[in-house]
Amino acid sequence: MTVTKAILKQIASYKQKKYRQQDNVFVVEGEKMMKEALHSSFRLVCICALEQWIKENGKLFADIPVYQVSPAELERISNLKTPDKVLAVLEEKTAKTDFASRIAEDELILCLDDIKNPGNLGTVIRLASWFGIKNIVCSEETVDCYNPKVVQATMGALFHTDIMYTDLYAFLKPLSAERNVYGAVVHGGKNIYKEKLSRGGIIIIGNESSGISAKVLKAVNNPISIPSFSKEKETESLNASMAAAVILSEFKRRTI
Picture (tube, rainbow, N blue to C red):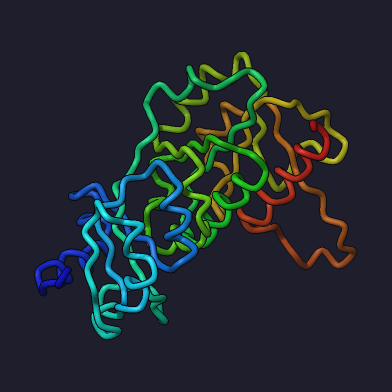
């Protein structure tokens, strides 16, 4: 199909959150991400691709508008420094508000409190998928999971994870009476390598610079810390994605 200036302008506008939310869509780029999207439950709205890509793959998307674009046009609508042949618009998918009632007793879920860096959030989503975490609950202040930088950083893991944004304290408070709520803190937590860890429970990772907020900390009944083994003590803390990698790995190692 021939692409118009109006279509290009509309897709280019999705670089901004307000326009994505207005149309309830987000953008993915590159052949790998397209393959992940194709095998996911997300609905494809349209595709913009170079001529050669359409010749090789266009038949896979017979029921979806596929627009042929020039390299210059792809560059105009892309979020990447070097656009990769194909870009697609997908419909957002929001997790249900009855999220808490669907959590199994032995399920491990991840809560993210005020994560600001898109790269960090994308990496954490990718880690969660790798370690078999299906459900992620984000505070309302956490960066949008459909931010283009977040989407690319997930490397397709976004398509295999349910993510909900909500008032994190309100979500956690009733659960803390019956479940282990592990909060990752720099100081004052129990050594994660020595503490008994449960198969099910909730893990909270806080803001990159200030950690878990004071309000959300009130719902934590098991504060945990990753001890530093550095003699120089020059590194003050790990960033959010590093901490998530260590914690999720240790939980899975101890509970499989």
